[in-house]
Image 1: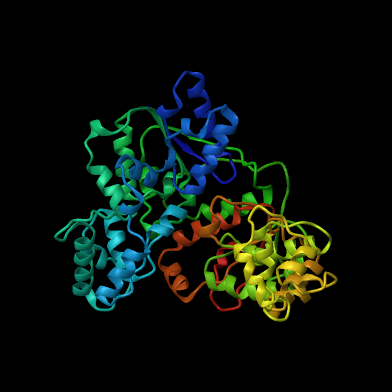
Image 2: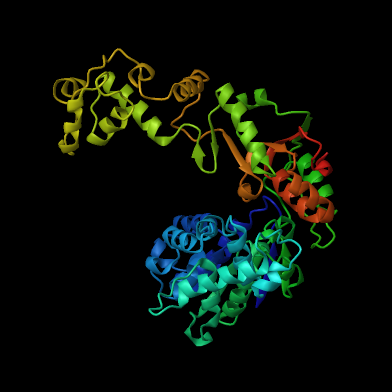
Length: 510
């Protein structure tokens, strides 16, 4: 039985899939007979957490709640040392005198992503698409390759020799190799499932679809969920046409719990211009919402509320980040906050101890790190390396026994005399705004691709394009329509569209 579920933005696709899991459990299906495969590690972990919380099971019961890459890794009985790592790519780079990058990090984090260097990118994309490297090299979207086909062929053969050849074969795999190897396994060696759920199917590559096909042969009930309108990873090998053309019972989740009326209407106006797609009737939530248009970034609007700032290209975020720091905003980008965790711990520890509190050894070392030797702390403080890890330290103990010679009247920005001045000034500016650096930031910056699956009350959408994106836009407008559709549909209350500073912008969102 094949079921296809289309989930437009904010319609509760994950919730719907977990209800299917719940029903299977009620029908006495054992958790380890349920395969739930998400596109990203983050999505699979979220589904697992919700399943364990809602259905009164331990995480170890749901052993097949994972990504397809993780599933292949497990089924091949691989170990960490079997996977290509940074050292392996560094060795190859040195041997070939060519900078090669590790694709495994990006795939593990995002479910999609290609290496930074053009050589490894073409080789990996060829494997993902199930075609020879020469065919991928000749593809018009591949881009210029210095050294031509002969150089690419040389690198490909050297990588294969390193991973699977040589006098003593080492059998090293990248994440794409795992999928290829999995698809070679005999059908009888694969687990038997009662139900298989595939989430974010629009992002699956040809190689991943071959995995799905094999899993479908070993299950009674198959659920394929996704949204072709949100297919924005075609550049990484995604094949949404498989989802669009798939035969089976179709269901469209028809009520968005995220989008208000005005944003829903604007997003639909944009996505309906895409030529090849599944038409969907779905409604907004019962709220008007708002859309604003501005000639430039409106940093003053960021004073209050939850914000997600989205850009098509990274350089837009680099420029905006400078402005946020100058204005003293606390924000997050790529999972890291603008005030690093080490500084936060140090400030907390110093403020605690100078007010009479006690610290463990790690907390003491956190703030000692920012103090100048022979001024704020004596050279004898290095005896802390041998100090009792179980002991708690007061200000008096540290001044008498461990080299501290800063008055407890000093606030952190005076005591931390080795902290860079610009960093200290920025943190103080953040705190003067009343922002809590120990909390998650209200403001998050991301590329549109990186924000897929996220949401916020307010979205600021930068429409500026890079030169390369602008050129590709005129040849494939549908691709950019999908990308900006995803960006627009992250907003729960207000969408704030920002005009570009250059002559290149995605004008269709106006």
